[in-house]
Image (cartoon, rainbow, N blue to C red):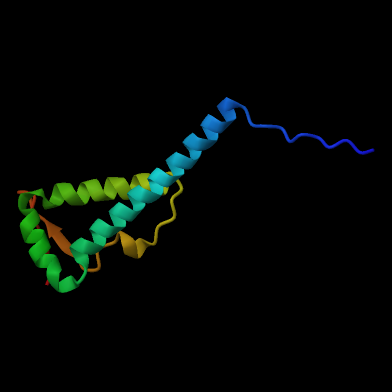
Length: 104
């Protein structure tokens, strides 16, 4: 008669670590989605970009810098991103007062 082995049950620590890893990966994907959505909302349709930048006003440069840091973090963490989802489609100028204007 063959003996059937009981499958080994993961320990509580293994379950915890697996859950943490899964939650961490999920959190990165949620952050990526939010980052890409915000980028697209700013730039597309392109006709709306000047109005979006005007509303940002003197906080535009800070918003762009935060976006760049977020993208750098996601890439550093191994999250795959299409450059089109974080690279502005037109050239722009950053002003000392924090505003951003599009190049003509």
